[in-house]
Image (tube, rainbow, N blue to C red; front, side, top):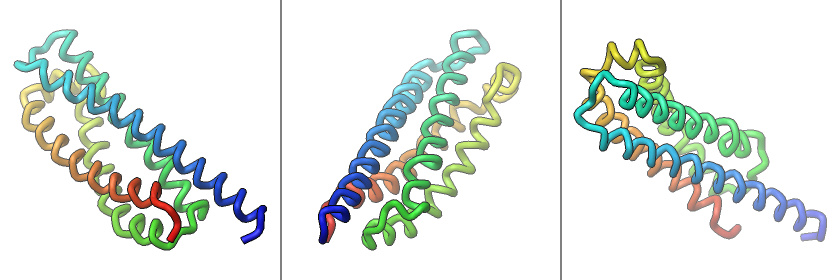
Amino acid sequence: MDMTTQIDISERRGQSYQLIDELMTLRTEMLAQYSMLGSARPFEKDDETITAIQDFCQALVDYTADAHFSLYRFISEGKERRAQVLDVANRVYPKISETTGIIIAFNDKYDNQKHCEESLGMLEKDLSYIGEVLADRIENEDNLIRVLRSERK
């Protein structure tokens, strides 16, 4: 392997690590918002609850969008060439993509004050479900992250 190739690989690897770090930061923020919202039970039609719901929705959308528009794009644009990474990405991406639709539906249901007030009676059930969806998504993302962080074989 010549020096130029080695530098190119190092740059791509550094870029993937940066994208992973950004995703992990957004994930942590989203999970903190989820926890804060969950601890606000019982859910009342008040400004504090509505704000907590909307803050969670914003963090959820930011996290979801970042994954799609940075890490997954990095892989799909051919910047990641390791066969092991591509195999895992091809296996988990459809599962992750499926969760994106569920996340968008949750956001659409609670994205403004009127929607929050209309759907508040279902929030506990919806939060439980979105928590399960997020657990599945995170497990699949972690499988991808693990292989992205591994050394080339």
